[in-house]
Length: 157
Length: 265
Image (cartoon, rainbow over all chains, first blue to last red; front, side, top):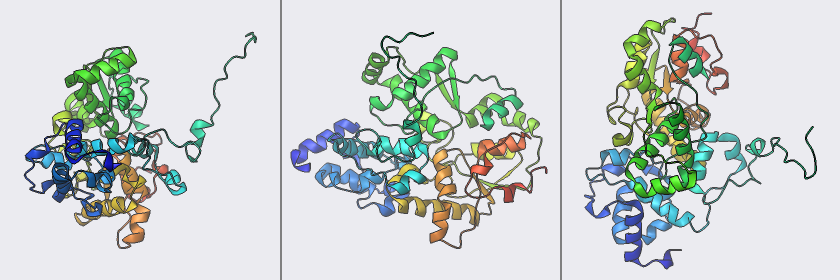
């Protein structure tokens, strides 16, 4: 996937899609200091901004873009108001638009997650709809009794 | 839902609208905004303000509103799809904001029937109520006080703790349990070390991460005490003396152990 873009064009694409001026970054690291998931990220938020400037291809295969919870703590604290979640979102969209799904609904997840988390995660991690075949918990929504379409020729009494 | 009973007890002038799912999380993609815009259109037919109790809905609706006010392209795209123009006229309010600005916490205090005196509650804001500040303008994004004022007005003792505006990980449980467990642990632990007996939340995903995931957190951190997680509306309903079922039976950590102190038997 990453081979489709040259370095400059990918940086330009991310900047355009997110509308963020990544070149104004001070690299102060306030975003990483306040990030709740920086501990489990392979590339830290301030490094993401720097990598968008110099080597954006690495980001397309990173875990960090999928771990951002969009809590916006970094945006609130950034002295340059760079919206890092938007950068992450534009990178995710770039991958998802190829029809790839990042999320796999395991049995464990389906019985655990509340519907709000499912809807939010679906919007973030999948390019298409919920995998109906696998969704055990959502089955009741799909198998509920539907209004039957009137059969041709049948008359209503 | 206790909100209808609360509205009745406080004699609030509110109308329920049909509305559909707002999408649970805001994205800049207009295709994800249709649900929120349809809800806002429903609201516009009934009035000019939309009040919601959920932090997720509040955030999505407010951000959609804000985006459509400013972004001509997205507005045109959505108008073309829905066949009705919407440009952010409806004001989106969170229930806490509604209680502060329209009802007033002093007035609210006069309606309190059950004393919650002595309950030490940690107000956990999470992220969606406060951020982004230029959109929600609910309170200071780093040092908010609206939840504390609310808790004082219904007779609880608010506990200040450093993690009150930190993110709990929201839907991240879908991809990484580690991130959620570590962060929810820090939040609960921080509230407990500051002397809280329970944590109150405004967001269904905060509730999931702190309440339902607590079992998994306590597997890793066995020294952590069981901490009841309550919705602010449940606390308010208890304070107003509402007898309806408040959904405590659906919690994962038993809140009755704490509430028997204050609930009239």
